Length: 140
Image (cartoon, rainbow, N blue to C red; front, side, top):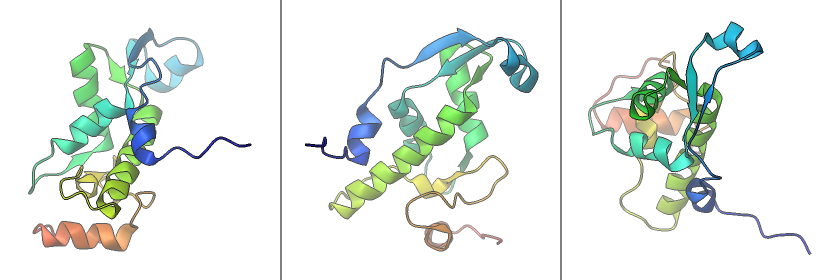
């Protein structure tokens, strides 16, 4: 019998022995440079996203900077931060669907270039509507 599928909230709370700090080595040095890197826990990314107040935005790159400073390393893994932001957004949407009133405001998290994230659960048009409801002017 197959295992039941885990909810987004269960995935968010599964730290998988994270965070982990390592030295950037080998082929990664060409892409990211030299230094140290943290792979944060999913809930750490969620905490940063949750702390963004109404009227403010954050990019995935800014999340990486916050986590790198927190762990006193050169950088936070961009791939993991992106995946964990996606998990946090889906967990928040799942909680909202189940009736939660206070959720992580994932619509305030933009991709590094300032674009809306089409992989977030409600789609770009709904993200745009959320931001416009908060007074932002969204250019598409």
